[in-house]
Length: 290
Image (tube, rainbow, N blue to C red; front, side, top):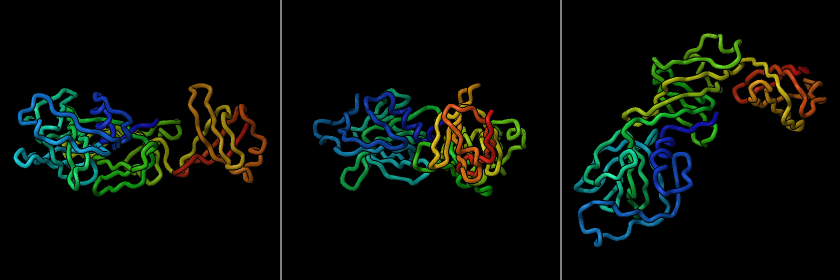
């Protein structure tokens, strides 16, 4: 169920072909020295070593390449524009293959490994993809603006929310139990707290665009879970049920003062639990032996 953001996926795909390690979602830091570009002209021996320090991977759209001043603009995904310097020490890749620095052009999709050189940002390497990156993301809706069609989702794995555009043509479906999935889906489901899984791709402006949205749960919707208790915390009022038919697990909260039967629950027991999703958790309203 856990997936990452478009810019994060682009950086991961691009840098998977390099001997670097520990890429974090959307941003990586480590002490590095940039390699020399291959097959480039110029007096490389006269150039100083590439700046040392913590490098950062930025994803976005390359624009305004200036070969005279050795700089370009990177329109960072969902954020700002930054000016980045480059020279013969910068390596440039297209779909994982090294290309000459002189072939650097404005490009829709790129990941740039950068390092601070004083107060300026220097590109150690530039990674571009011919095709737009795609990805899948799961989390809870924080907000949806029906005027701008901008959807903000809180990630399952990332600490930072992701913002996506939702065109009117984006298919929206409900998935899950029949009582829930049979209801008519639409943008009206994109309220705060709704649990969704969204597929997306990046447009030419570096914005994430939803290509399909699956509604998994909306605040106030009711579900019935059956399974064995694999985890039980009476103090916090939480348990995990594992469905013996498909092996899926469900975390359900309960209030023992309102459900006296919960005081007799034991791990391994087979239960049938009716729960309401409140936008943050599944809260049990009924517990019975199955």
